[in-house]
Length: 375
Ligand code: BGC
Image (tube, rainbow, N blue to C red; front, side, top):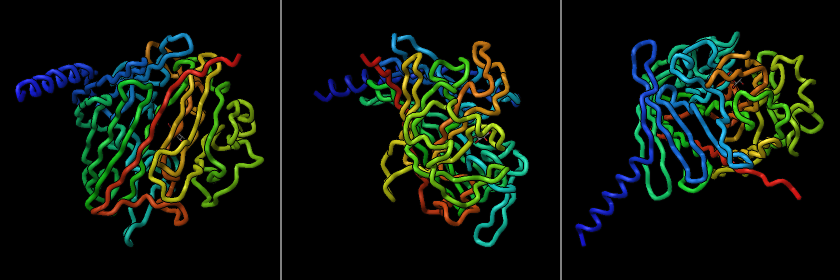
């Protein structure tokens, strides 16, 4: 009896181990090896994630006819990700995603100075050793529910100007029988420090490299947003979306009102929305739904985060990506679940400060489906 349990557990482990692909993806310019892992669901979702930046490199999902397409921007090589053409495609973004005004904040009476990599502000955790640029350790796992990869990285005290040694883990997992990707983040620190992690995938549900996303319909579970100044730093106010071009409470074509924002600093949509959710609720809450009529693919995003940045790819510049595909202006969009931008300088926003002894936790789920044509 003992023997047979041992054998079946062993066989299960073998079956599970082969279910997760692991391959070399290339080397960084400093000669470090980068690995890429493949997760699959039985319903056709295929996700590939690499150890540089714990980055989502490919995400294939079926359309109405069962044909799969890769729906996110990216590159075929590590060199592509290291190039100027990479605008945070698919990466884990941090230590603090989005902007920190003038790259400065004061914590416990001490002023901290960060890289100004998006004049005049700090963006997405810095310029040299932000979380998207470092090599993470990876550990694949699988069980009866599905498979995943646990990425971990220890950011030393002072890296990119942030205080404290930060231990971060990001787990990507795919359930066995559903087209869902779950990303779970955790972090601990030995000194008080701001933390705000997200994934920066650029989606085009018609397949990455297809025209624009202006015909996608977007719904956001947000009655309010955080208006910004000309450098995209929140003014501190929280305002209603009612009567503005950022009202996505009902599913609306992205192109419908975007022209009224072209002359703004954002050049289109680049706004943080305050998600409607019960105070203190730690469960996944509905945040956004994105739909492409041609393929009938739908993406539904749920998160534990209080905010989501909707960025309509206004700074995409026609760079060449995977399979030679061109990523033109507004050819993809980001929906970045997060705490609000510049929270570290905004007393009224939910805090992003992590203290020793606490654990930062965040979760976001991307659920794909195909919407049948209404008869
Ligand atoms: C920001 C954009 C920025 C982009 C860079 C987004 O998260 O909101 O303003 O240009 O990241 O890739």
